[in-house]
Amino acid sequence: SQQGEEDPQALSIQEGENATMNCSYKTSINNLQWYRQNSGRGLVHLILIRSNEREKHSGRLRVTLDTSKKSSSLLITASRAADTASYFCAKRNGGNNNDMRFGAGTRLTVKP
Amino acid sequence: KAGVTQTPRYLIKTRGQQVTLSCSPISGHRSVSWYQQTPGQGLQFLFEYFSETQRNKGNFPGRFSGRQFSNSRSEMNVSTLELGDSALYLCASSVQPNTEAFFGQGTRLTVV
Image (cartoon, each protein chain N blue to C red):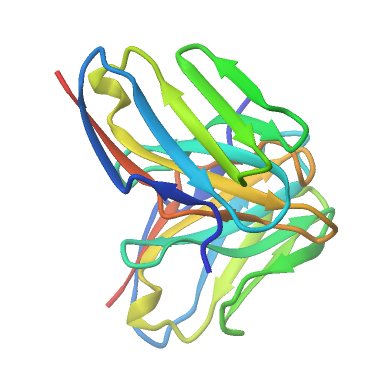
């Protein structure tokens, strides 16, 4: 089953607006990673946030993690048409022999 | 530094055949994971290898197998192909599990 469920499933905004995507999970995590994927291509790594971190930034990207709510958010500020893509969160469980599982993703469309 | 390289990029096979996909990780990375991506099921975890050992296996039939070599390169094999195996197969590498995972461009497999 999928872990790390994103919402919304789809988001459409105008260029210049901010986009917020959320990711929820069910069990404890070691870390959570956000990725971007343009149609039919490989995934581009955006940010990794560890379970003991609350916020990380990378350029126009901000990721937050709330372990008490078992949720994470990806904020893209001042969006551009080039940000149009699918965004996924991937959760790595705690414990040994864990693996990284993906949610269904959020399809972001940024209109020029 | 070269990224994750997957070969071939595209492949067309007939039902019943078998196929081998290859993944060369980023230099210095010892962990390799494989994922299957389809429109209906999203990104599904197949296997994860670290230092030639399989750490985890996803919920796929035994027709799906993989291995990792001493130089960290990995292959996955699918035997007795079915139409439903048509998908984008993605490989990711990381220095070790629980660190940032970087993806290749994928192999697009079409089974006819």
